[in-house]
Length: 408
Image (cartoon, rainbow, N blue to C red; front, side, top):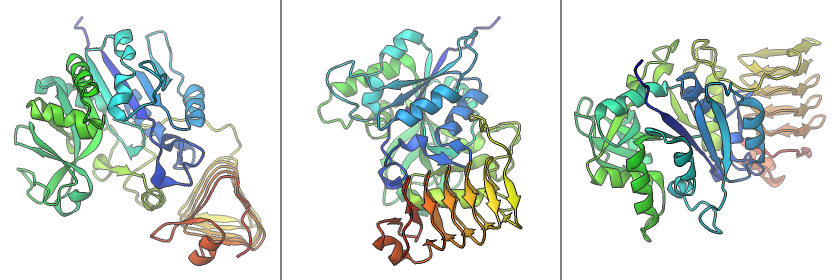
């Protein structure tokens, strides 16, 4: 029997997610609900588990209680073959300090390498929406013969200045790693496109450990994976790019095969939800060959009474639409919408109650929000701001967790 390489997966889930406030006021960004019944972290964990990489440590730090609880309750795999998903909180193993950056998070968690003694280490972010067979990237890393592999997604060159950009040759070897360059380099086979870094990496273990020690000893380092560790490998000529578009996921269509979204802003979060409810979504939640896993909601099916209706929408279990009208919206579990209420192009999270004749338009309501009889949210941006609600540049109103909406 041929021995398989031993792979340890580390998921970086300690981000504060300031651009998603107030959704991250009381939770870590990876714990933010997405797509009705899921949380953001479910997408990366599903990709790893579906790919057969099932020794997974999730490094947490910022307001991690709900994230830790979700992982502990949801991600229970059989231990007979050594499978696990475990949250690893910041432990101050190297002194009285918290993580100083993503590279420092790995450096302070070096004991995980010693516990598992892996041949390769997968380091992925926790809060993007995509499907990926990570085992294919592991194979490409091994075949490439270099110590570091960076996942890159093709983006139009004129838009690439918003990303970390990978300048790679035809042999996939990375020549430079550029942070939001004014003039992004094009690709050899497509000059009008550039490789944007997805923030997903694979390392040969010994080389990663050496790089983390060198970074920890560098007083000028920001201790960031993308800003310091990857450029160090590039400078040594020891990094390659993995073209995300070459990844083949079972059941994926041509459109969603290369779908990747950073939902780190209110605009992006709302837009990604609106894609989910389109007639032909780019990202298909209903791919049974590569499912997104989460905790099964223990509630009855959604109910529609008194001519309540939902069009082009996702309505999660436990929700009751009682004489209300829902259009192009995503409702999480146990949402109530009363007679005469209208919900349009909105995201309503768990246990929110929308009262009679209330109107919700282009808004995000966090958990346990109550919208009383006749109140409006998202209809008048200035009135929303005056009541203390967050309104994004694109006009999306966000009402924080547990708020009872007041009349305008």
